[in-house]
Length: 249
Image (tube, rainbow, N blue to C red; front, top):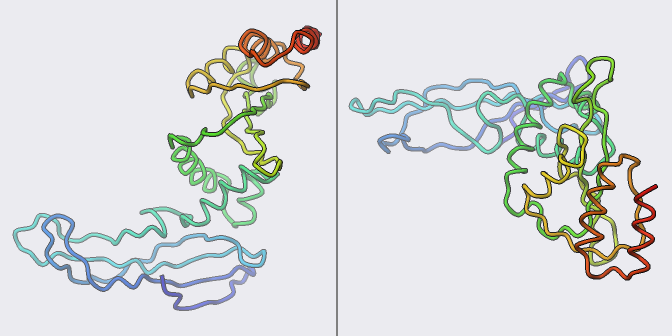
């Protein structure tokens, strides 16, 4: 991408005008060298610059196939910079998802920094997050999992499904540093919800337990008791007894 112009908007935002450097391409159907057919401006939001929202005018190139026998007439260039009809660039979408995973922030806060509506921000984050969740190696190397419930909407709105079970990777790296990251949030709060998530992802967790700090919710404690007390050969009899006493409180 080439930056053609930089300006400041009336609201203090940074305004960029960009275009790609593609000058030669072939028709996706027949392969004949295409002819330029003008440009279409796509309005996008990019990562903040010095705390200021960034708005981008991407002069998206339109191509035309000169082959009379080809069914395709015109098409718009596709770049990794942003998907068709997107409102956020791919870079800022990845930045937003990383912020939710590693930083103490919210979708509302990210949307405010970008100068977009909550729905616009969430739609882009959701699509990118679903792609990441589908990656087969996402859960490799996990040795410690934290679990807790989160009330995501007030109980006065509905009496059911007002909580989610949140799983967090608490595994320490080779230097002993805790690199906490959000793994998943599943609707519902029960032992079955937690157990089903572990089974679905095929996690075979082997840990040596010396201290247990659990949410007061009984369902999570039941799952820990059944998994650790019966399935971990590393526990001594004294550790097993203390853990069982703690989980039964």
